[in-house]
Image 1 (cartoon, rainbow, N blue to C red):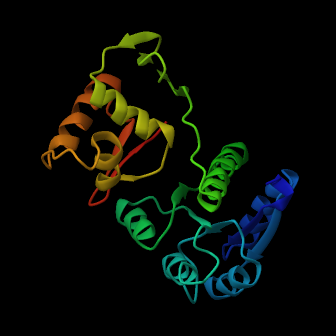
Image 2 (tube, helix red, strand yellow):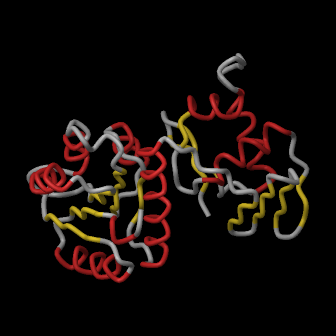
Length: 232
């Protein structure tokens, strides 16, 4: 799917933000739709079936959480990616967003280039969800101060090699593959340990603690009641 084929719906009550983000997205060749409140956003989403929706959380009439819940009920939008773009960074707000059916939670302010990069990654998710194709895992993933080489089973921090046991490596590889995405405990168990392996409830917590000791406390954030995410 070409960039020009992607429709992105922006829902935010601040006109300046809508204009600024629209301008940057249109420069990239995206078709952009806008709404100033949740109710209008739902109507536009139902009519145009966008591939990606960016939602503010705090809006009059209907907030972003309620809007997301309603959009998820619309036939034809099952695979649409919904991301919250908001200044609210509290854990409880993020948890509410994911429980409502959101796929990502992006904190404002954010630089245009970073936002475009996140949007491209989110749209890849839509394409693979819609087609049923699984994206090949990248062999080398770079983050700030970290390099993870899946093929060589190697992790470098500031140029120095880290010695990680297999499960720690797989857990870090999973988290780093989608920075800022919150992986639920269930997802982590399924992708790292597999459905056929029974492990204790504290297993993930112990592995997270060991990873933090090796790569730094600030890279892996706990989202209470949900799971963990990797931050640059």
